[in-house]
Length: 293
Image 1 (cartoon, rainbow, N blue to C red):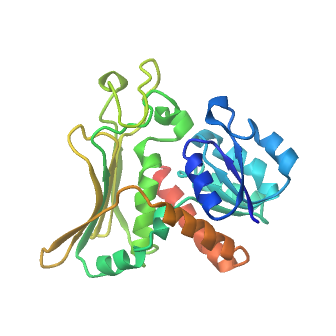
Image 2: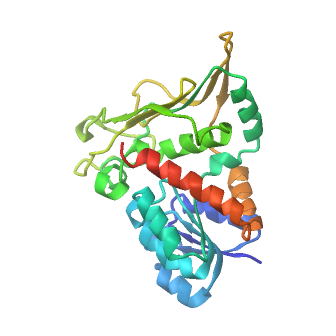
């Protein structure tokens, strides 16, 4: 039986469910007693359980590096939730410091079961728009989510990594295509946010991050993410052929099957250096796209 440790029981609850469906023994950690984790600290979990096949870091962004470094010596694979760490250089440092541990930024959308179909459809199109636009979904406004020194950025660090991983999965030329534009905007201030579809608004907190982000590659690929349009939701991929024919794929929430496929493939390739070299290249590239916006 594989043994896995999940640190952070927000999105970590999803990992617990997925790992248990794969028949892993799951050790959970969270300092918040209301989250129902087995342990309140990583040190306690390590002391009791020793080594892990996989570790999953699902904590606030600013804690990712420290916690990944803590579990790395006793884990075969460390999965770090997006956006990874603070920068591509920090990512390189983490991987270099622990050369016998495999690291991967979570890119679950790349393991959707229809990803090859999407790639083929994109190849036949003139333009592809990958969109994740929310009417009102600023995550826990006023908390670490919207504090730049803790989250490293806003929607550019929260949603854009998902879109970039889809872009990589759908575009065989992602290494050579040229980024033609990129930018971020902060459209709202905390006083304007009364509520959200994701968490509570902390009115005495901080909101100093971008809530809209866009990128374009060549004249074909357009990526845009927005926490709050205040008007509509639009989460999907728009394909347009040279003849002007349109087709839309609704992204919705990523299915649990994609998380399962990602974890299983990583474990099956634990000794495949080429697989991990490719993952490191993708992860470093995604870090580089979002770190200087």
